[in-house]
Length: 169
Image (cartoon, rainbow, N blue to C red; front, side, top):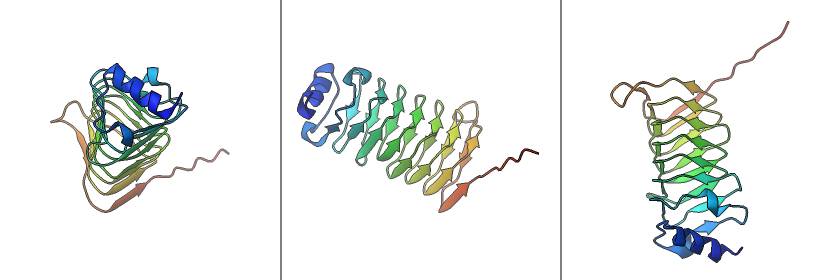
């Protein structure tokens, strides 16, 4: 199936694509795994990989181009700009522009990050908020119970990687 045909199929499903010529859909993407219910693909969106799943009420690329490579996007997720590869967003997540989110990363419901955040092998429980300009890799962070009762990592030029070595005797 051609690139143009895939984009047209998405439009026919009801997906809003303001500038269809600017959206790239990889040949391996199964368009049946992309919801047609209230999904917006802004200019510069690239969708790759046969495992990609995009659920309803999602917004991709509002602030800057987005590349999705085998990403699970739960309902209500907003990815505003950046690169996302082999990661999962459970739903109601938001991520600012300039993101670099790599394999093994999972954001549970209502976890979010501001702009220019890098994640790899990171799990954020519900209601965790990450500030701007941080690299938060190889972490597991507990959240909270609501937007008022949440866990937060502040903004700054911060690099946080945790390594645990286990030795068997």
